[in-house]
Image (cartoon, rainbow, N blue to C red; front, side, top):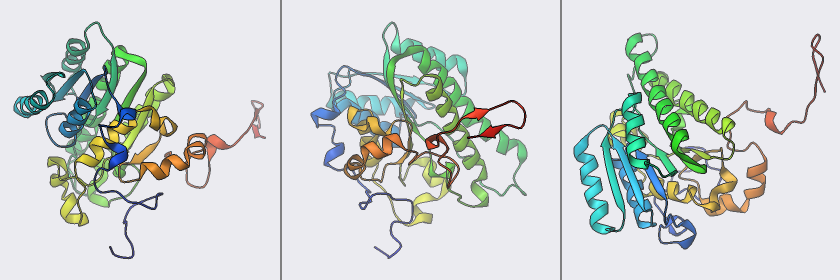
Length: 306
């Protein structure tokens, strides 16, 4: 590797580009036995691979939501062939359509409860500088991402267990600048992060994680030129099994954090207490650990911090 490797933030000495033993769905500690799981964007790519790993880990029911029916059917068939004990339901769904999302969740969950949501559906939008981009297309794409996450979040909250898990597949574009042409996607992903952060604030018992899934050659990644532009590729199994691991009790110390699937979880675990109690891997103001700073607010006029 070149001296500057890895080219992205990496708090662990090991940078992963493929799955590894700690993330294996065969580990008893990662068992999803009896769990009900919904995956948005579940027909192809990271979503489909994630569903397959939850099936291998013993999930009893898996719901797949996506725009196109055939990829959903293909993923369903591949899971049921290998794991015949798993019930897989599909629903072609435009997640920006409230009625469609509500019906999909209600039909899948029924009178039961939802334990795990992996929310990966998104769109990039126009890739042009602000000066040149069509404003309506820019704003429509931002709204598309926010609307989809909003309706999914509301439906999830109606059906979830009190301590349910959300793995929100986000993007490094939320906290890193990738230049002028990705303004639309960056704005959208930061907004989606804040949306789910608000969900967590309103329901603090939930386990919500925000994930940069790596550089995987998905259709959306190809649209953005990711693998070719960056010069390396992560295997799809990495974000899929990373999400499975996050749904396990081992990841409790990372609740609410923004994480990269490439970070080595064994190293992260060695600093669990410090991470859990501090602001590391939060999105906030650099150099000012606000949530760690004890303070008292006094007065209504000439307000003073002490």
